[in-house]
Image 1 (cartoon, rainbow, N blue to C red):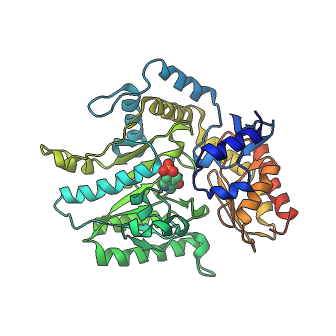
Image 2: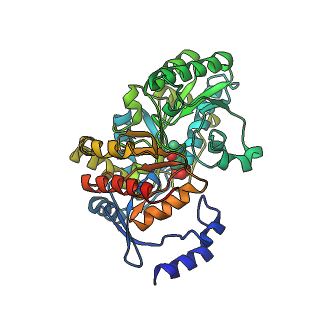
Image 3: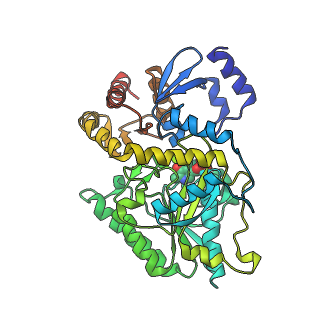
Length: 436
Ligand SMILES: *Cc1c(COP(=O)(O)O)cnc(C)c1O
């Protein structure tokens, strides 16, 4: 079977996500036969460097021997068991380790990122209700935020393209300014701008603290906004404000957790602990769907009662799936044994000059870097830039998915320094190759 055959069958049988299917009359779907490390291979023998970590989930490359081995081993013992009223080794060990790493406890599991968002929002509201403050039932999120596509998550998401069609189904929520460094006034530092945006948050909190249950943020990097990066001082200030006004801080580290921003969790760079921490995507190394919400002990305690309805009566069928938890345990073991964070830091330092060269390209603005994410905006990009650049990069063996006029590279951590250099050079060549 060739690429063409799979492409045709996929178009007939599969409804692809986040896509106007008619566009695939001209924009080809890429059939992938196998993956190895940072490379994906199609059925016609072509290869592509996975510059988006398969939608931000893959950490250590495709078909990683250790992850393959751990999952295969788990498969011989237990694939899955109901987690209501039952428990198993991988879920217990993973919960213990995540608590030790985050300082937050009682891991509550879901399967996708969006379900972690839903869990955190419901838990926050229910906590206040159990604490005799049911009026605290509103949520706050940032401009340009993305927290998932289910109705509750979409209510706190600020991407017009995803929201507008469903606006009538969404619960109103408060939106505050994004600390995105690109939005600073001329001459204003990213730090000062972040403080100005935190002051804006305080205004709302001061007026509405009796109604607001929680504020939800993507720490350090707003991914879907086009890798919008901001100063950690925003998070430390927000933490202070949340304490002062008794509002929960929900850290959505679904995309930025597990080393993506340079620290295991992005919140560490602001030296803060959120009230709820949502994790998914990289948690299984990109192998299996798993999400988790960790919370402060005081929150757990507010649900612990003789009365059933004060408990958190929420569930998903695959909650705490043993195979997924086992993959996550292996991911944590790899972080621990191979000093992944230090290794990533060394790689980023080694390519700093190469990225600076790309940043100096006349079509590049707002070149930015955080941990294992590199991004820039293309000046004067014409309509349709993202899909045209995607197709052109693919021709050059580089898988990129620009967001609007933002091009970013978010590769698996096993990418080599040479492959990083090649990626930046290819981007610069592409910028030169057309008018865009
Ligand atoms: C991807 C993402 C989500 C949603 O996760 P899904 O697994 O796609 O439901 C939520 N928040 C952030 C920050 C994300 O990047």
